[in-house]
Image 1 (tube, rainbow, N blue to C red):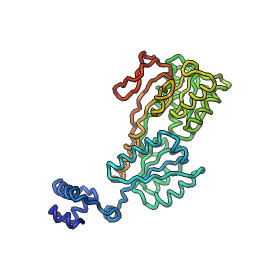
Image 2 (cartoon, one colour):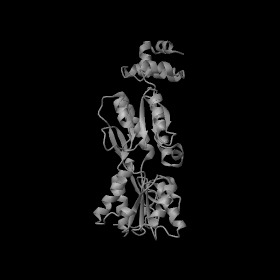
Image 3 (cartoon, rainbow, N blue to C red):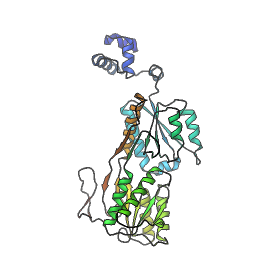
Image 4 (cartoon, one colour):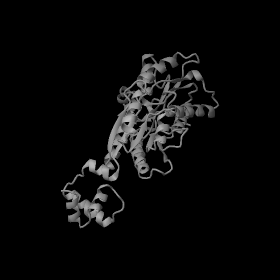
Length: 358
């Protein structure tokens, strides 16, 4: 089976079949339906190389993770992001090319850029885990390569999909303050990552709105891992400003590390120190006490990034697209709420508070 045979059976020209195969819109609905039915009936698969030459596209999307490979597999949010990205690529008949920085100093990104990205072996790029000073963003713009960031960029007019980290963090800290906590500490991620900057800003805003001056000694920046959260908590418990009575962690992994450090120190959560996380990972529901957290739609971030990138590839001169997805406030026992477990609320909350906290 080839294009000529499909064209004969469908009663159309070979060029019409080629347009259908390459998703060209310049085909009538009736002709498209006849060609697609014959393709399905004969289980026809077009040659990838020929298809790329005809459409001038590789039908390949790159997912660049500027993160050490070890961190990629220990951070539970990244598999969810990859899963969502891959699912969207499959749905839109695209191939996904994972591009990972395997170096400690970021030098591998330069090799990836020259060999794969600038060499146009991908039609566009999704960039995850970027920093506020990442030079890659300027290079992608200069080379006119379509790209979408997972996470906003504060200083450039670029396309991105993100959640309102600042607003969500403010809500989480305000909730801890509503429990009567007055020495709320924060464990943040790397200080040059946009997610950390936004979540720290939300933390500070909540304290200011409660007329509580932020205490610099109660803020520690670490990496987004349980080990980072554990070590940061050890430092907070010995803080010159006094031990905190609550901790807001900028990731669930760090929150779980904080809870482990307090257990090793003989402290109880939430009786001695309340804890609130950020991510909504399933691991948080299975610890004791279960972790209160801001649940963000990690897989959907990946899916939406693919949809946005394909639109940019189709319309390269379109203005940057920017979208914020909603988060979910998931209350469990680690923040101090008395909970009834096992109840599912509309919208996907795993646990419901039995009493409201002002």
